[in-house]
Image (cartoon, one colour):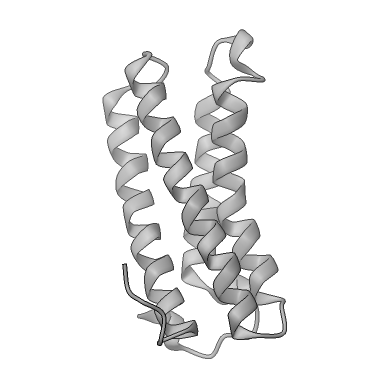
Length: 128
């Protein structure tokens, strides 16, 4: 994995780069949602998507691996929230199947990367 290379800052993490790009894509997608959803599902999608790279950045800035691991856990929770919200958005007709497939496939990869990073930060943690 590319994350094994010298990491100077959180921006060097491929998982941070990909989750940031996913958050930007979620913002683009939710611009098309009905206006009445600006404080509903659109807001929830945006918050969950932004939470993933934000928690990676904050956790990376912490002083211990245990703290970083905690923030990776939070990012994993946000990824699960995002997947749920994308599924709801698909089922109520706010997103197309092709968008859902593309976004959830990327989210699955990001989730795998988060688990891999978590296992590297704290190798003694139980794998999920």
